[in-house]
Length: 164
Image 1 (cartoon, helix red, strand yellow):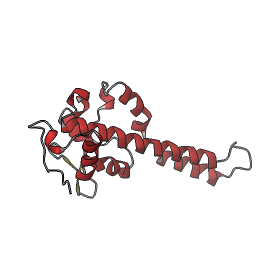
Image 2: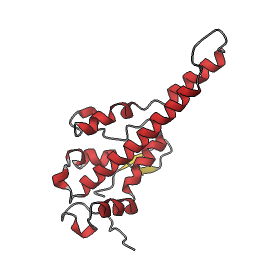
Image 3: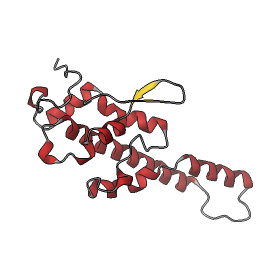
């Protein structure tokens, strides 16, 4: 997809960042009229995968809430309270909290258009970056009834889709 953008992690490895690509290449502004552009296909994939990630995030939070003590009575231990606070802190994903409204408003607000992966969990960032996989791209093209050759000329194709 488009020109690949990499971001250095704390381990100094370089990884592709779909959010950087969307920000740098106008992907957040892509609409249905751009269906034949790679940036539109990338945006739709990022929306789908981020929505899936955030749904799983909320499900995990619900499971933690259901397992936690219902009330903070005198029988609740300090250790249980500390563990619950630790789990709640680990599970924070502020971007998930605004993501649905961002999608509904077609990413008009600046807070909806992060320049790098906004997910707190590095595994969430890796998960959304799956949109860069050529097989995932191929699936999106097929779902839209398109093939690589249908994409607009000059769309920044960096690697052809293997149709085998």
